[in-house]
Image 1 (cartoon, one colour):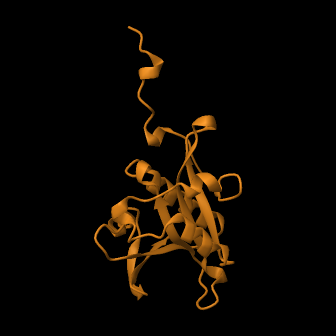
Image 2 (spheres, rainbow, N blue to C red):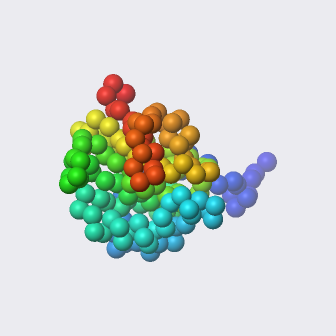
Image 3 (cartoon, rainbow, N blue to C red):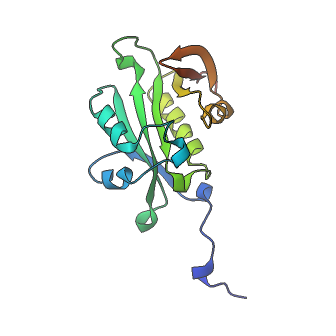
Length: 171
């Protein structure tokens, strides 16, 4: 029996190529279309505000997450990363996830986990011993997700956000 290739199901997200690269003039239009689900908008800033914030922060950089390849490739999310070594107030040997946003159409498919795995490898590539992040403690927050990845609460609260850390030594 032959299957109509048009009727074949799309490959699972985990089976699709995944890449992370800087937001630039070639992909910013696709990134600007990203949006979290309506119930999450109180938890994470929108793309426009995020890109504006990182544009004025020398220690920050915006990266976009893509799934698929060739003409099938599409932006699925974005992150803002912050190199804490360059922080003027309290420098630290840490890569900080300032923002993680997965578009509502692509949530629940493993893109957030793949993005965080990329961040961990990026921190290792930079020779940093840890990855940090924080979240607000509101309904629907991502704390459980980060804990499953190995992040632990530090007990610190900064401007209402709970800080978490993942030590990379020995992993």
